[in-house]
Length: 79
Image (cartoon, rainbow, N blue to C red; front, top):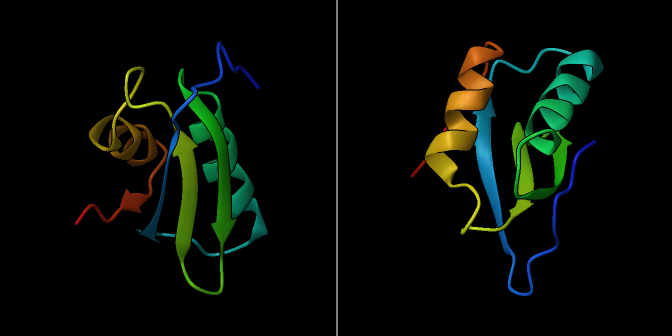
């Protein structure tokens, strides 16, 4: 897992995610997000079909995170 720096003012969002079918999916989503620069943590709730991600907005954004998950076969529902 790569964390290049810790933000002094991180943003935490919980967003719906589509395409989760098993614990392996949840692990894959968490790892894919946590590997992105600026992401400090990602936690998947399979029951709620959501992901809570904490990230530095100066290093990444929700659209980039959604694109990362799309490349893995999942849809992050951005409101």
